[in-house]
Length: 215
Length: 301
Image (spheres, rainbow over the protein chains, first blue to last red):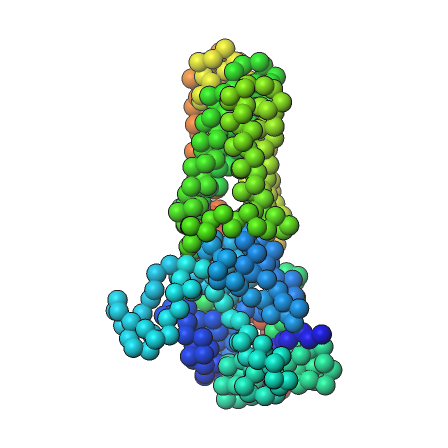
């Protein structure tokens, strides 16, 4: 039994957007669609000002409201905690987008390209028509997690089976692993630090934890 | 919470852009159609008039609303997949209710028996309820998930139904009864609306949501509810059916405007928030931030 989770150390994130770029590269999301983003938050009044960077994407909730409202059963929660979308079933009604409090899902109804109406070579090579007219979102790099099941590698430790955003993080802010394993990196980080989950009051039980400070 | 925040890149709530007038059309036409079915069934069973034409109108409106949605979805030729998740999805349940309402409604039009008319009316009511629950289940839109949104949607569907029946039946012998029905339904709607706004303001809501509701509030309360109540009352007392038609038209127009605003104008997303700001460059956490939200400001602005 596994339950995959992500731990993001907000003390370390420098807002470089490398995870955003890595996600885009790994998943070939179309122009205008970013499954992972880094929020840039400035607050306070001079001289007491602060700036925080908050990487966000699908939170792979334990109680996903997107799954509850989906009329087609395209959205499902797996036993290991990943929330998935079956693109062959989804009708693109956008109800899941309304249900998600994390602004994590997107639909595009027409192919979109970076430069004009025609795709550049890399877009033409990697465009997936399955993604048009249906809801899409971060998968926690599901194919890599599935590969780990076959190879026995450990997500979060072995790069081949770790989400692209976590691999790419230059400051070591992002961590991935099995939260039910008390020896995993994510379990240890959560035990040692003060953390929170986004909009926890809504009862979604997200699988992404943010570290604020030491305990 | 510290409100002095400069939020960059979709941190604060933003107006949802995925459900446009086509989705609103389902709530506008479908909700009113469900209301027509419920009101016609109740009145015709009580008064003994022939409900068939008005049942057809209610079913047509429901069908029109669902057709609007069909034009909205990304993969319309897979639309039958909507029936797959009756266990928890209110969109699936709405589709089943519509299907059953069409079945019983067409049979009621063909056979004219009271049990079928009653069943169609009940399904019309269930259709409005399912629509209200679709909105309530959407946790990403604070204006919809609020517990006091449901009575607003339910009461407005029924008020619109009574309003349309009041218009259609103005030259029938039974015209007073839908006008009389308008009075409690509009009263319920305006009370539900004011309670909803008060709770939104007290509990906190995206600034854009409160701004959108503030724009329509006066017209909705006065022109859409209080004036129709007076007009309907005067119509009955002064034996003036034309005033009942006017009351019905105002009730319906205000309901449709309010539902369009609810779906398209006031539907702002949750946005993001930090309960505390992380330790960065100094030894302590900072105050929490929740950009784009407002508390207890409705009445003072």
